[in-house]
Length: 110
Length: 119
Image (cartoon, rainbow over all chains, first blue to last red; front, side):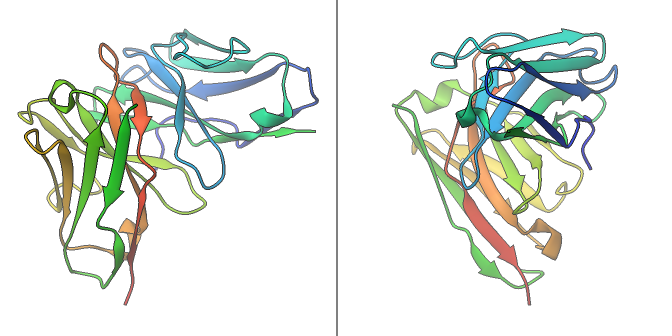
């Protein structure tokens, strides 16, 4: 049972901006940094954003993250067909003493 | 290049034990915390367990606490997950992942190994 809530789907046309929300609580997002992962079918997840808004080397700057209070969001600017994937937010939860993932959002490029 | 290669998965009956391994290369294994994450086919990600770089500290998801044990052998650059009393709901792809320094994010992932628990 996921502790972090995401919309099940999001979509946009090429070039559009798509935003994915991640809602948590004071014990996870409210007190720890948020990370985002991208996963293509049949592949392992890949870290897209860490520490709320930092991009690992090689991740295009079209991807950006932000956090406010107990919520976070991932934005994809200039949506491209290769961005079609599942996206998960995650954060450490102090109450559970564990790392919690969001429910996941499937992004479709129309 | 960082490489994480899981092994040990397979088809097992409920109640039996299985040990997963994750062979690490391309980085100084003893300097990094490691995690196990699982994913039921077609479903979301679930964090399973964590271990500190030295192996001193471990954490478990409530769903596996008391049944699974995470460990590491820094001399062999290998991470382990001992899974006992397996249940049907443990069926999943199990990934090992390396923790990024100064962050709790999972910087690198293995390709995963499938565990199927079924009679």
